[in-house]
Image (tube, rainbow, N blue to C red; front, side):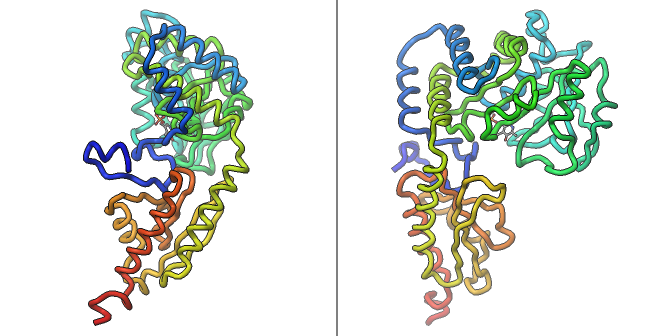
Length: 379
Ligand SMILES: *Cc1c(COP(=O)(O)O)cnc(C)c1O
């Protein structure tokens, strides 16, 4: 049973991936314990922010880091820092940045919506978003041509949400940023590699604590010491509306520690075994073909892929998804290939034993739908 059923809500089984809409991550026991201990005590928040930032920086090998309530807050705070710096009068004036260097240049194909528009989050930090180039083509020349004495930052988004081809490589944006003396900010919210973008020369890099790291709702900005100090100071301004509590900070630290020390291959092998068990249990269902597939981006993720013979079954994959989501517990699957009649089960967010619930529910749905066993068509 789920704690959320006490509120009269349905239990949710997440077989789709890290979804903010489904509550982000279900944290590990030791992360939850760190949060509970933090919640029951007092601390100087200013000192906690400083120490936690140093700890994150040490763990990932960055110059400095600033804790945030999420990646979206990290973007707004980074942009505010690039505009107002450490000047308290300017910090208190944002997001009104009239007359200041406030333009934030980003490749047009990176102007995404991750649940809210990226451009709005830039504005929240006082930035004026300027989309450069075309959706599917952004060259160095486009960026060079857009840089002016009004440019406060260059923003790069590393994500599956963005257009992947035809866009200026980060290395080239970094080169232009260095040449013009403009900071390069990278939104790497859901990325797994916590070093790569700093190594490529980005000035600030933003991560979500609740995605790859599997922590609570939280995040951090890492990078250049002077800019990180400016980020921290934005909590006296726009950052105040995005504050994170002590329990979120300690949860993030515990999750980060766990993430950096995890055994990736063992985790992948365990997840693979569970999906193989699920697939074996689906073999005798007519009008369904189940197999194991590796993540299309080549990551060590093995999902159960269920291909539905929509004509034979008399139900489309979309309708099967609706039945899964409409049941109790509600089961959410990964539906990137639904138009091909394919539903995927992602093992990463499944809690222990939940693959058995998914299996049982699929048997039910297919038993009710399959024409030979349907009273109307059998009778
Ligand atoms: C999820 C996401 C965000 C927002 O992250 P939060 O931690 O939920 O605020 C920002 N940018 C990208 C590319 C994302 O995928």
